Image 1 (tube, rainbow over the protein chains, first blue to last red):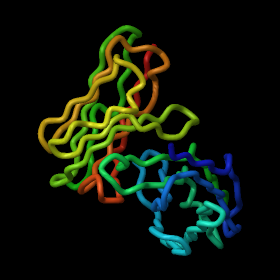
Image 2 (image 1 turned 90 degrees about the vertical axis):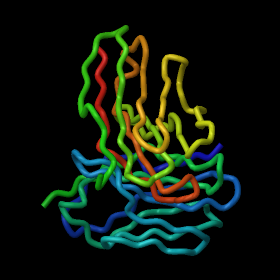
Image 3 (image 1 turned 60 degrees about the vertical axis):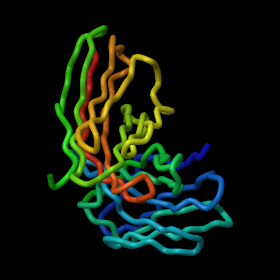
Length: 114
Length: 114
């Protein structure tokens, strides 16, 4: 079955630092790839996605590029803010009647200090 | 409603008791998913419903877990004879269909089994 390996946290950074959260996956075929974010006290929400190889997803200053050759989808942001403190989840997704469910990584806790 | 809602937000129960968790999906979303998030771990898929098709129950951890959905509306997740290892946050999500990539999550129900 599909699986995801995420960079272990927690990750603690100062404001304006550069962020990378690594994510690699195993999946048959060509899944779409997602990053979800869970802010304190809130439900998960989609941060960004990429649907095919070499696609770059971006949102709120975050970016991730779908690398088929390395089966990776690393999340990056050039300058983090305190408001980015949250838990980040990488998830591959395959379209199809049997594969509608998301396979989540274990989550990476990010804390940004002023 | 505007988003996915879940109730109760918190539930504390004694070992051996039954609990029922409720999820109200976004109106018009035909697919509904249940996930479990244990402390410090990623999300585990439990079950999903798609329209009138048979649900995918492949993630239910034991026969103490069951779920129902009435049409394309409310779903209930029932855990019988709760155990301490059932303590977790139970998340519900909905999407426009199982072929729709983005899932919208509710805030979750935090279950504590004493």
